Length: 185
Image (tube, rainbow, N blue to C red):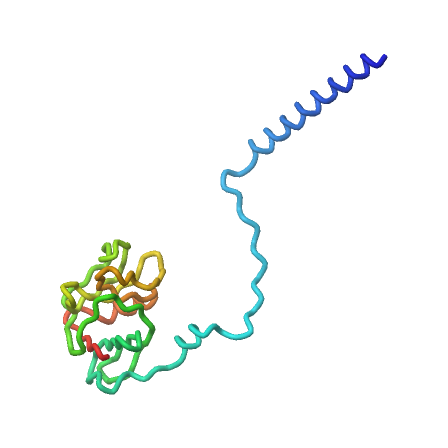
């Protein structure tokens, strides 16, 4: 009798494995190709904004030595740009990531623009507003298509003064050909 019960157990085991295999196949055949991820639970509100966010939100006055009239003001030291209207009113100010090649302080004119190109660092960029040359490198404002703003590689000469995509949109709308760009220390 022991032999027949071991044969029954073996048969039941084979049937169970076959059933599990069939059910697994059925589940995979009816599953969506790209399952949606479960919604993440809402993040708990942070008690205080980060130091960087607080720094960006803090109003910073347009540098006094930046001239008058409609202009883009770029402070290399403050790593900040101001878009200033004809009346002298600041319409927007935002932080930027300076390039490794810095233009000398002075007044420049926007001399070329490109809606989308590859930057001197090999990264796809958009809303390029060029205005100077420094250390043999063309310098201009731009935003990375991927939205990132990493520190530039100090071992390379690059001319891209990077900003967020939203700030790049504002720069593109404001700084047309022959617009004044004032660089201050």
